[in-house]
Image (cartoon, rainbow, N blue to C red):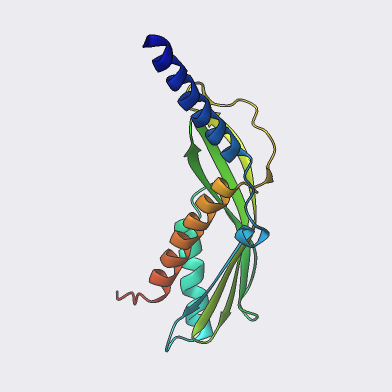
Length: 167
């Protein structure tokens, strides 16, 4: 009886290990590496939207690596790098991507692309003294997490643009 139970447990354990191990290398599609959202901002001028968007950038880019790299009010373009961190198992991951915002009267296009990842530490040893370089984020699990983060970021921008500040 103990032998049968041992064999059954071994088979179940090996199935679980094999199935979890194969998830690590599952790649996402190239389409998952980009995010685009058009946000309608009725009755707001390009200039008003530009100011609100710049304010939103300042409030949401709270990492030293998140920066606005280009902005042109006349063309209605703001570009930069956005960085966020998350835990993947025991590892602290940092994801950096390009964010681009195009502004017109009554409309904004948010486009995010080129997500790259690096491990910055783990739950056991804390922060790594020497972190690895960024590498393209291509795994299904990582891209799903990135798309979730991008959706939250788009919602945050939409809320900021459609909120009227009175002072």
